[in-house]
Length: 457
Image (cartoon, rainbow, N blue to C red; front, side, top):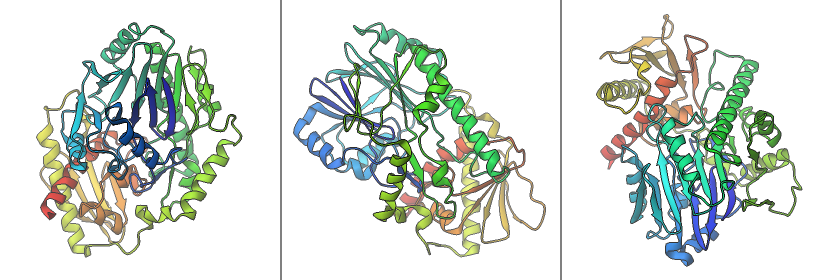
């Protein structure tokens, strides 16, 4: 088996002439502001040609539906008979998305092992954490790869024990690789106005240390000898927040190794373009001739020189759609429907999923007006309040008119605001990162966007 790291959470696996492309993403902005840094080491043209020539020996694996893992424009390039392997989620959103692109052969995988070609697959969803993200395991007779992508939190017992049982089935127990995120992927703390920049940097570093330690614990718990830090190789381009460029980007190998301590895990020093064959890392140019900072800065220069930055949300000017009155009316509609959505799911979701959202008060503020629309989740009333009065909410989201209009019109998803760092967040309780509210808004954002898009057809 040979594993070539392409970019972000995307790798190309080859074994006995059978290829797997994991979580493809090219240069289309994700969440309206993310660009892959470094860009993909292989242009999609070559992979599309490879898929056409290999036929059934080329498949695509997609862990979940975020644009940095599932790039529609990229996927359009592949033959529609290509098998696409996805986790079996309770909601049909990812499958429908793949079907809408035109793929005919979609293989949904749950925790029960399914064979395809020379590979065997499982997926695991930790329902207490997320309903629409998954770990995917890829096994051959002598290798096991755990594609954890954004799932850095502690593996539950079922997942751990199942993977450990698969480790026992491979002929060489050392040939186990876990790949996991070791970087931030949301707006906390850099979007939060409660903190100074110094406090934000301190919180962010502590969060990343926690994530890295948890990822390394997961590797050790399943008996993985090797660990790859990925799924955090991005730069954030928000026009009125230029300092995010220096604050974003992957962590160094030294940073990851500093978290290793006495764990019996080997950190792979792999950049995009490098590959790993379970014997050694093969560098793109034979040696590591450039530094991490040179690689990051060259990525920024590339996107700026080719005007790709101008495709990000905050660089699209003059995009207001609604008058102030129309905008307020549509914000009220958005929150009323959000409340209905959360109430409809009460007691029906798998796991104890973010039940703390009930009773919380949310505010949406248009940065161009003096009004805040508030909702107490679980109640039926939505209020429009003047910001000159005292408005008390657990969390207030302040958005520019162009961004909130694009969300309300269904042109972009709610996550473009929060995960894309394009919102200012104020919390009443300074240490509160409102994960319960954010998780529900993330799920509802797709429901709302699909509803608006259908109504516009």
